Length: 418
Image 1 (cartoon, helix red, strand yellow):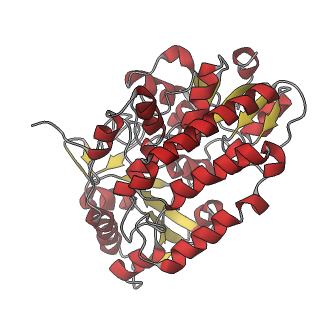
Image 2: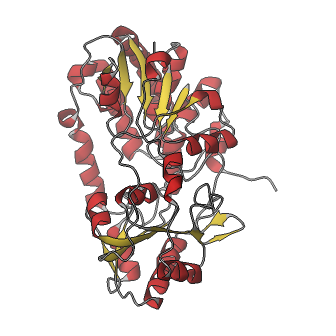
Image 3: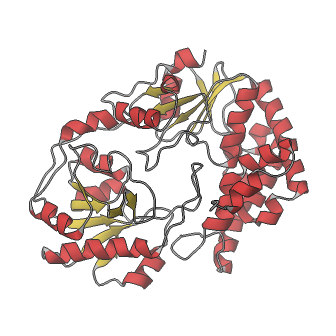
C-alpha cells in the first residue's frame, strides 16, 4: 500500500514557485501536524491562552530585543552556528554577523525588518491555511527580493548555519546558492538520525569527528563536502569515575515536533513514559529509590510530573554541567549528552530498548547508539541495564576522539569562503 502522508503531498502540488516556497516551509507545516500534546512545553495547539499571550508578547518585543549586528569590515559572513563558532571565524579574519532574522530594524532597514517580522508572526501563530495562503506566498516573494538586495549590498561572502530545516535557514541556503556564494552547516550535536537530505542542503557540512563524517557518507552524503573541525571549547574525555557519590540522573526519551526529510515516522508518546518506567524499575532493583530527571528543553515538566508523580523522579532544572557534576551516573538514550558526560568523567549508560533496529519512538538506531561500535556498550533491556550498573560497565574512552576531534580547527573556511 502506498505510504500516504499529508505534508509531503502538499509539497508536490502547485506551480514551481509555490512548491519551492512550500519546500522552505516544510518544517513549519510539520509543526502544525506533529507538534501537539501536553508532553511539549509549548505545543503548537496549546489550549492555554496564557501560553499564547506570553508567546505573543515575546514576538512583539522582538524589535526591542533584536540585535544591532555589525555590518562593518570585509569578508563578511552570516553565522547562526552554536557555541563560539562565530568568534573562531573572526580569529581567521572574517567579519561575522548574526543571522538577519534575529537582527534589529536599525540593522536591516524598515522594509526587510517588516517582512521578516510579518513572516515570523505567521509562522509562530498562524494555522496551516494561513501559511498556505496566496497572500503569505506573496509576502515570501517580497522577502526574497529584499533579502537578496540586502545580501548583495552588504557583500556577504558566505553563511554558516546551525541547521538547514527551518524556513529562514532554507531560504538563506537557497539565496546563497543563487548568488554563487558558499554556504555551510556547522553540526551542533551528535546526530540521532542520518539521511542524505537534512544537513545536506548547504555546500559544506562541518562535523565534530571522523566517525560522524563516516556516518553521513554511509547515509549518502558526498564525502568531499564534509569537513571535520572538532567542537569549540570541549575538554577531552576524562577517566570515568565509578562509585561516584551523588544521585542517578535519568534523561527522557523525547519526541520530535517535526518530521525528518527521509520520511514520516509516527511515535507513541506513551513510550516516553514507558522508557522512564523501565529505567525506574532497573534502579529500584539495585536499591536506588530516587533519581533526578532531566527533560529535553522542548518538554513539559508539568506533564511528566502529572503522569509519573514525584515520589521517585525529581525534575532537575540545573545547567547540564551542574547536573553532571552532581550525578553519580547517567541513564539516557541517543543524545549528545553522552559525549558531554564522557567529557565530565561521568559514566553514561546508553539505554535504548529496541525491536528490529527501531527504538521506542519507531526511529532507526544509529551509530554509536546501535551497538555497532563495540567500544560503546548499549543496553536494550532492564536486566541488561541492571547488570551494567552493578558491574560499572563503562565505554572504552578510545572512542571519544572519533566523535570529537581533539583540537578545534575550522581554518579550512579560509579556503572554502575565499
